[in-house]
Each structure stands twice: as structure tokens, then as C-alpha cells.
Length: 150
Image 1 (cartoon, rainbow, N blue to C red):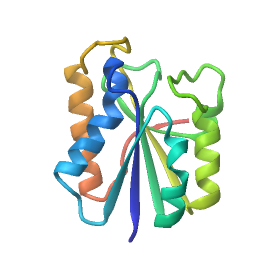
Image 2: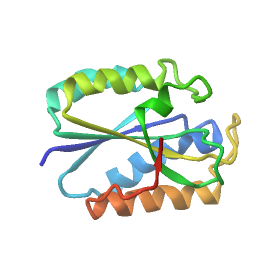
Image 3: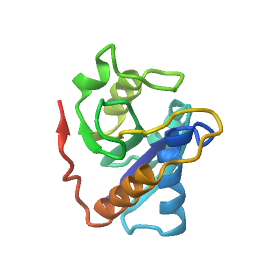
């Protein structure tokens, strides 16, 4: 199975660096059957790579404000992403990005990690680092068994 993780975020913005941290972890410790793209703050710039790869499954991972405890991980519904109060530091709203991906890929999931601090120059918190490790381990087991945020 051809599966892809698109890690989203900005390493210079504290916990918003969760996605790039996961991408680095996956590049250093590849998971059989998974590819990774570090989409940074503009993952839409990588649509051409997604189109060329033709994955059967895409998992987008990003830090996002969900009003939960820092480090919480959720499988986030498209409906929740589209709501006005969904905060993002990226140029293209994630709802548009997810919709565009669904035109290319049969199965698309969004995994959100609750940040503690999103501020320029802040380090990634230990809670978010642990959450990234957990997401990595779940991908390694081939599972997306995260609580859902509808």
C-alpha cells in the first residue's frame, strides 16, 4: 500500500513545529509502506508530488488549536476544520487543502496535535514532542486509533 504523511507546520513557531518534527523522525527512522513530505507552512506547494506519488492514503499532521490539554492528539473531521474558530498559521486554510487532497487521494485523514505555545522562537514543548512520538508509533503499527474530534 502506498501511504503518505504530509507534515505541516513552522519549526520557528514553537509547537507549530510538531509536523516538521514528525517528518524528521520519519526521515531518520523510515516506516515501511509510508512516505513523508515536510509540507512546512505551505503544504499546497507539494500537490505535484502527491499527484505523482498517487498514494492510496494520506495523513495530514499539524498542530492545531482544539481547546484541549497540550499534547492531545485527535483525528479531526473535515467539518471541524471548516469551522470558523479553527486556528491555523498557514497560508491556505486547511479546509481547502484537505478538500483538494480528496480530489487526488481516496482516503485523507487529518491528525491534530494540541499545542501549548505557538510563538516565534519558542521551543517545542515536551508534551508536543511526546505526542509526535505517539503519532509516529501509531503510524508504525498501521493504526489511526485516535479519539475523534467532530
